[in-house]
Length: 327
Image (cartoon, rainbow, N blue to C red; front, side, top):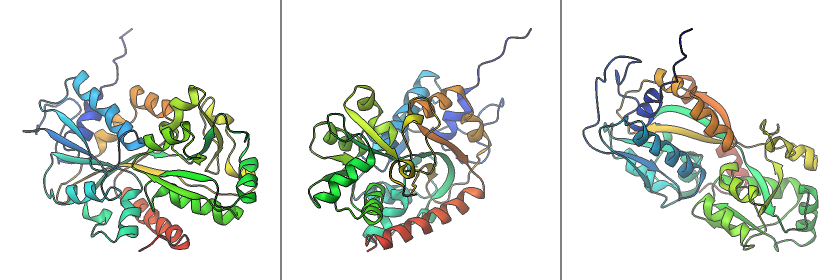
């Protein structure tokens, strides 16, 4: 019997890390038609320790391990202005295939909240890698065992409890406002530069709760420092242990959900090729990464991706208007 070959990460990492989107970039077996002539800048428009940063730094060692690039991949955090610094930087690199960015929902929220002259249509959409869940967390030493118990306490003492989140007028604050409006609550919202800082603040009891992504809090959860109360979605996370966390509706009776983009973009004026990208998301390494970090498999490319982005932008704008977050 012929020995089964291990899936090739060459297609996956090169598509992400070395000008994903240059027409004729790589063939499944064919030699490279193009190779980077200088280091590839991998822009993360968020702070260190957050979900986007964790994902980018997962990809980085794969490039070195499998010797997939003749030039280094450099992860650069450009979180200034809630990610505006990173987006404007990529926008200004028109036609440069040596720059890529891994985005989250600040792709939509930052322009709406700040008025910065940027829109996702200024970049080249390449592919949606996954969607990220949000979970309501409290410190493990907190007396609250359920979301209802916690919300009842917040309702009794308005403006006493601190909700930590990534940035101002970003996803975490949108979800916080949704909770306030749904349950008649009032939090003190405390913004941080990245999801890693948000988790650390809760571990240190500087805040009372967060709605961090799973990857940003999983280490503290496994170490017994944080406690999940509810998933901010209409279905449970279908993974071992995570599937024990109730949905917000199960925990409180109120139906609400919100998931966040993890997508790849390049500068304007760069053509795109996504077939190999699709193959990359089917590798066992990628699937393990999604499971370890409780990310929702949701690869999307081609014309369906911009269509989804338009719908996501409209939904985000509506939620932000309701919360008074649009400038």
